[in-house]
Image (cartoon, rainbow, N blue to C red; front, side):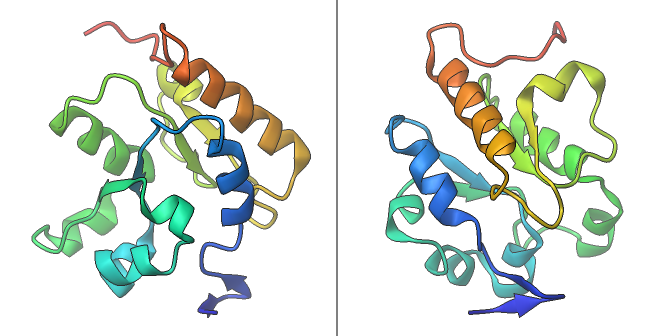
Length: 145
């Protein structure tokens, strides 16, 4: 298993697989530095099959300016993807809440940097937000565009 700073690559995926199981139509866009480090295909191959088959893209692409990209907050990386691909209903699961606009807090499951999805309270929040996302009204921000 690939490790960095005592953290295993995608170590909380069993919890994500479990949370996504009731929602077969939900797709995944990777927003992780591992895509930049390993490349999209290699990062995807590190995911369990149940997640890999849901992945439709990543917020990072090798044609992007890496220097500029590294200056962006995770929120800015995600919101660029959301706007560029005109995604209307989405949810981010991340331990980095820096720079998230208040009106988008409903779109974020903010995980603990050390415990991730291992915390029952975080898994509960994820399950609730996934159910809301899958509902006819979906998860949307308070922002009007």
